[in-house]
Image (cartoon, rainbow, N blue to C red):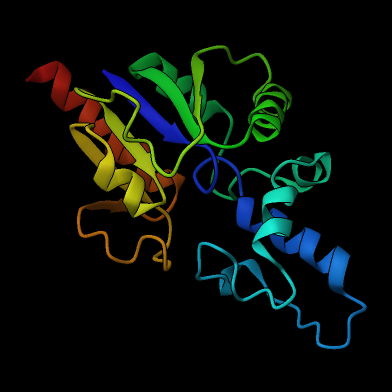
Length: 191
């Protein structure tokens, strides 16, 4: 069975990286207010007063962004190896060309010696163009889940503005995600 994992917000802590870059760039401005990643509730980071959509898009395409990027706190690299043993693992992400190139480099640097995944990348608004039929998608964005044709859809992470409307299966962290995916794997092998 194919398993499609999102990159931003599922494997990599994108919100934290954007907040760090914002802090570096605007700390000395008069109306600057320090915002923690936990306070971000909008897809376009509206909580960051000085940040424009143009600047945000540029952040995602710079080496600075990938230097600031960490894995999600509950993520452990061996999870990818374990999932690769249970599933046909795909990391599915949206981004501009420089962003996709940066993600490939970041993955090879942060998931070293793990070759059990394939990176599926695309430009666009959602992941509906990727054939996920018969598979599982794990994403933090409810729009990607809704538009996917995956058989099983799991919303990852805390409730935020970009996924609060999701009423289906949800997990709050990687420990819970691994439990769900382990159970699904056992169920499909038995059934």
